[in-house]
Amino acid sequence: MQRVGLLWNAADSSLALALDAAALRQEAIAHNLANVETPRYRRFDVVYEEALRAQQAERERRKVDVVRTHPAHLPVAGGKPVQPVLVRDTTSLVRNDRSNVDIEREMVALSKNTLFYQTVTTVLGTRFAALRTAISEGRR
Image (tube, rainbow, N blue to C red; front, side):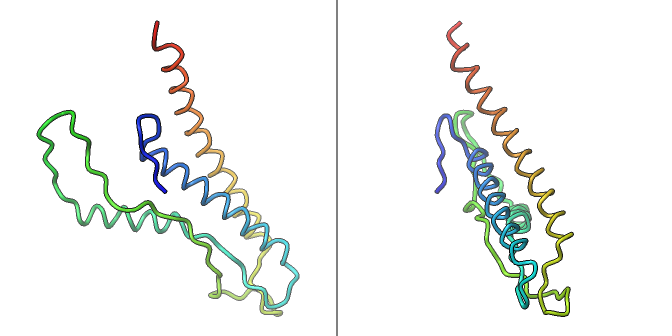
């Protein structure tokens, strides 16, 4: 669901979806680490950034010039928001027991996901701090 309004815009919705992707990826990594010794276990991954890049490339390819005849007209935004998707990685084999969980790879993914989550929460926090300042200081 995309919520857009005076205080919540399309960028905020994208940031909320990015947080959803980070939370889903955290669950997948935790699940992979919990099953690192399980024979024939296939790791899970989350597809989000790739789908976001593909959507952006498609928007660039289909770019339509929209003429705004009045400055109060809202710019045209297109497409549905990209949802994070949980997928099972069946393409690689790492160990002899046919499991493809590499603990070092999962730890790198965990660190990367943590940095991604912190970055998105920092951006959202900055936006909400600006809104708080506008609300509390706007009448002065």
